[in-house]
Image (cartoon, rainbow, N blue to C red; front, top):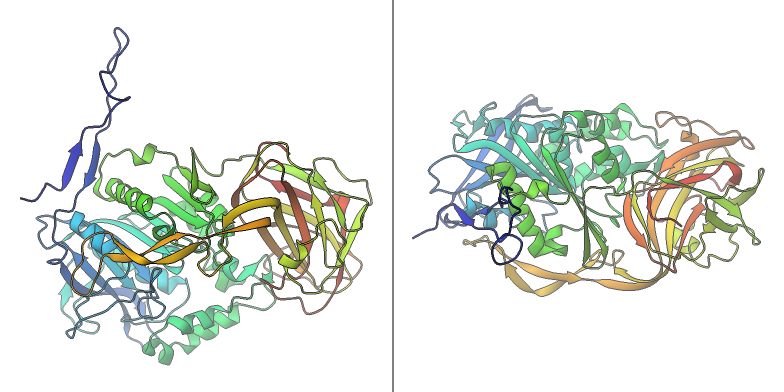
Length: 607
């Protein structure tokens, strides 16, 4: 006989034995451990595709329909909640560490659902819905790279699951499909672009979206392609659209891609195109709970996206944060067993309404060393930044970092020779024409950076345009995750482990992973870049007057790092960081007024 859907296990309170209570006091009441159990057959699950009308019109004049592939328990006697991943990647780059793609049988019925969500959660009483974003795979319409079309296409599926939109059994037919099997409670999850769309849909405030789990996700596409006016070397929105669009989109959506190009100016200006792909101004609409996962060493979707999203969310939004030392990596591949258990309890609580206490657990879990995790009540831990100043030393371009201000009129100079940050941080006690460096004394105690640093610089350029780069460096021996390696902090093994139930064509067994580490004597813990011409506004680049000082403030990437006792914390400042940003088109010399420079670092502990 199958077990009931919910298994109740009595909690053990304060160890074994009888709980002694003070006289006249009420005995403590423990919360039972409750979770959904695998009582439904995955092999017998219903597999179907519904095309949802988004309300949008494609360039061909037809209504845009997006394909939602569904797998749900056939034995359920009532409606079930939904775990939804809306992605552009299902028939292009694939999903997960093994780049899995959707597959279909000869009648077009879905067979393989990438990732483990279906294998694990369908037997536990959930439906899994994988949505092809507009213009990709089996959906119609255009790819607009995080824009209104994609957000609307995913939101429309949430609406359909709640009876507010129309679904069809085919991409062009008139036979409608009902979502009567759905409770209307939806949790969106996904890594990278997928998680980005979850952020965008949540920012619409759509009813029925109960929780989102964005993993390494964007909340402002401007900050993915630009850094305070400086241009990242990661391509363009239109080229990204071209990588994922289907044949119909490639044929009909040229005007959409042209609009992307016209809006992504080489000047680095924040145009209307970027603003409509910025979910931060609408974050006040978010009602869903938010479980954010990000790598503090993610050099793809940089952690500027982490701090500003959490700051923008209403204080009433229940939230949880996991931060890893890895790069752009899914938690299924850096902390698999704990992740599956935590995600299980998270969805049980927010989608099934199970009172399992996860909302009362620490809101922040941070990896402070490879596989060494720390819980805190919230994130960021540091609430008030410490202001640090840059003082010159006895060697040109080399000085100290601390709370004492430098003498008035003190300056330091460097020239843009378009070298990399990894070259700049070598030999920190020596002069370099390409950068300046300021270090603390060796720390007497561990110090933790937790939050988003900012820097203010007053710089004079010899040219009409210039870039600035500021990086925080931990100088000292350490073993860290090898986030610059091919696995970005993990290595893929030849063994497999199974998470849920398999069916023909859809295995629940995935390649195992292990932590990949490396030994270093210096490590960059946060980075920030800017175009000096955007000193006054991101909306319009100003032409610099050579010899005139300009003051600019910009953010570095949010981070959480422990600088160990005996190590030194440093800020290194240069111009064009050739690893990440393009140059301003020349080789200016920049002079900093150190008396007006300040670095605000969210510290726990004192230097």
